[in-house]
Image (cartoon, rainbow, N blue to C red; front, side, top):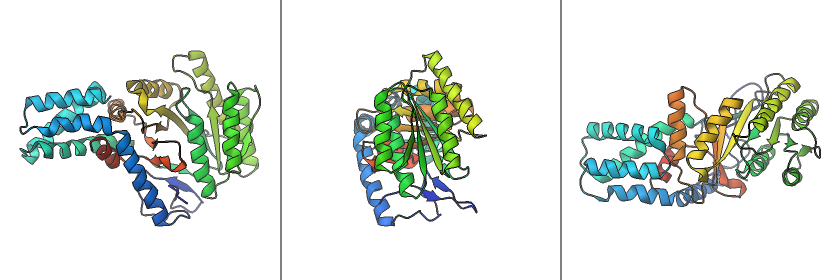
Length: 340
């Protein structure tokens, strides 16, 4: 059984999901079982980002490091959805690295670009810690079709497999299929689901957190209705859910995770900005990087965070529908996959 959950070194029981393999022991899972899916998953990530990688790799087929190379690289990065700010930052950093290394080999420049991209993305790495609060309350948001409910199902599976009692809140009361989908995940993982047909989403969330506290749940996850950032009245409802959860448990929700579709390009950055302004996000889950996703938008998100002095980390990235397709984010792995 594969698990990316780790024990947190503390007196109280806790679980952390690190972005990079820590020195702490893993919760029941043998090393071979963990390594094989990760290696296979990395191959799928590289395959998903191959279109972008090929476009960037073509820049380095020449024999000279000159203005033409940098101009072609700028175009390739922009086409990969890195955005203007991140592209300018990467090019400036790359030129600095080339000068320091005194390299004359275009192929070596590709390696230096991987280093520059890794450094830009590194602040996005952050463990998602579960166990510091009883229960730890996660509020999951995003637009329709981003993969919120599926992501919740995968997280629930891994938490349950790590012997963490989970309770789900079906706070997406507008879409009947959402409740049914969450109930299927709940049944599959033998996890309770708090649900009300046509009920108030905030009330469902309140009841779920209250029930989680009474029943000794380690984690409560609230699935909310998908909405566009431009739907201001619906965004206000998300704020209401957040406030009501705080009334059910002081300090909650402890994590506000935005699920974004990796295929949406620069629109993903727009979503991060809008949802962060409304809810003060604590993390992101980037899904569907196995399709036509260009992946460069993570660089745009990282650069935006650096400019704001506020980083919204990427807790997980997904490359498919299987349980093992959701993995922790590692900057070096992602940079190498993007440029492979």
